[in-house]
Image (cartoon, rainbow, N blue to C red):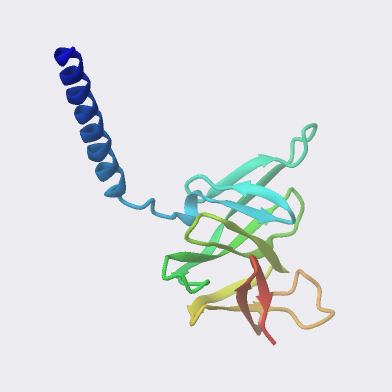
Length: 171
């Protein structure tokens, strides 16, 4: 009887020790680094997953046209005040036609992808910044009514903030 009690005490002690060792090791693991080049973005409610900064796929199942998305500009900063790294990203894509569509997207430190907002077609991105949680995007576009074949020369600025899981236009 004493041997059984001694066996169970040793077994229980070893089990508790193992649990303590394993719990210490998992709490010291490095936090996963958020990489905008390998993230999923929501563009017009469609998930687009980049691998090494690129997505390529068929526009439709029965189509030979290839849809291609990649990053134009990216900037790291804090968008939601949690002191974790977040990313604002300008993506551009061609869905098989003549347009090159630009979207502003964000991925927050938790890995959550914020739905992208359309910026323009065949524009030229100048700069992307994050200051005090506000995303500032500067780009060149065309004057109202100018054909899309015209080179973009009109500077425009957009300010966005993250609110309730969405990029909201300021002003």
